[in-house]
Image (cartoon, rainbow, N blue to C red; front, side, top):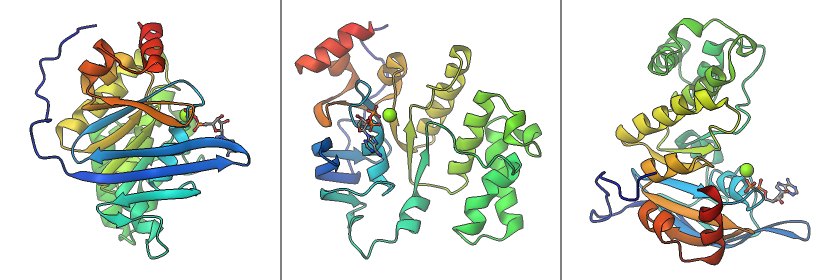
Length: 257
Ligand SMILES: Nc1ncnc2c1ncn2[C@@H]1O[C@H](COP(=O)(O)OP(=O)(O)O)[C@@H](O)[C@H]1O
Ligand SMILES: [Mg+2]
């Protein structure tokens, strides 16, 4: 693993937060899963969330597009309070796409229909337009010849790509990925990493929960390290991997390499 990165960082540029999170708290019964979580997600950046299992990473991601309720705190999307009653959750989820860990494809719908579904149902797009967009996204992800198959006829890597195409068909402004490589065989990990890198090059803003440290180092603009429901460190990949400050982060990095 390299200890310096040749890529251009955007830190000198003016940052525009797409999401701002303030003092988020969430419990499941008496169990605190998120405690005073505050952070900002910058437009056109890749934020990688790292941390041990049970840290609250998935719960945090789900809070960002209101798949979870929160107990207290504020989450702003483009300056608007997403927890406000006036926030239209459907619109929010149209703009914030999520690729869940288990893909959640409809098993009795073809690949094409899985990808067309949200644009037609949520965005009320006509079928021809939705089909055109779905085929475009599936082609980009190398699935042009799979459109009429059911998800069960696909490999895990292909199902993952359908799930990504389904999110992209909504033309989101922010993509959330929850451990996008965790369900894949090692030889398929590279494919997904390449897709995320290509999306980054196209300017997509992404938050990626991952255990792929090489990927996080290479692609992330910012690392957010979580443990026990708290953000313990936020830093550039160089700083985080070469010189973590927090003791838990130090132990985590040491264990990973
Ligand atoms: N719906 C739920 N009900 C009760 N406990 C939950 C629920 N979802 C998550 N948890 C607990 O919250 C903690 C954090 O979970 P999660 O956000 O999935 O962590 P991570 O993604 O970092 O592994 C875990 O201890 C998990 O068991
Ligand atoms: Mg998780």
